[in-house]
View 1 (cartoon, rainbow, N blue to C red):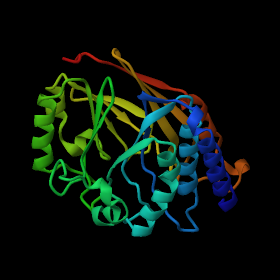
View 2 (view 1 turned 120 degrees about the horizontal axis):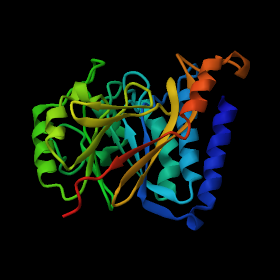
View 3 (view 1 turned 60 degrees about the vertical axis):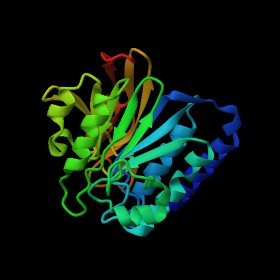
Length: 290
């Protein structure tokens, strides 16, 4: 696995060598979730999975201008070394001029994350003591909320975030994709989003599954994991004035971890990959830019 990871990093470097000749598209956004990166020698597949997703994004032509991480960046309890490894793994994106943004999940810890990425705090932060981000693109914006409770598996939004979100949506001039690590039922903003025509959909991770639902009047998308367990891969979003098309790039499925050899992989795992890979989900924009 170490050799495989080294090969992926070398491939990423090769992509960087061609960076000046590959255009970046502001209307393309890559979505990653549930990275769970760790230096634990017994858990190599998480970092290899993220490295593969980074390589895949760098191999795009054109490349997405933004890459969004929907939580659980760290393996278990937000260890500082996990975030140090994350910094190494996302460096090829930064070196290629791609922007990345992240929200936190239940396996993350704010202090440890900010000790490695102090520039991510915001000055001032959009919501006090929470890591909230707005990523702007020409046709729609993405809001990443902070549903991390630092301990419990479930998530929640505090009242300050709810108030900020309500005010932000009230003044939005184009469609908005609202998201967090946890599902809509846990963040509890379905009513707020359903009552705002500006909200195009809700995006989340946590469940490691490519899945779409309409929940309490809100279209929702659950993302795969980059390499932990479940559906393994990432999603690429193509935005236009009419709407957004989400395409799943799934390369594997396993639970609780990959098979030791290809021969040991369950047939139903590969059947799921064959069924899912290349699947698309479309969202029409009913709210047009003012």
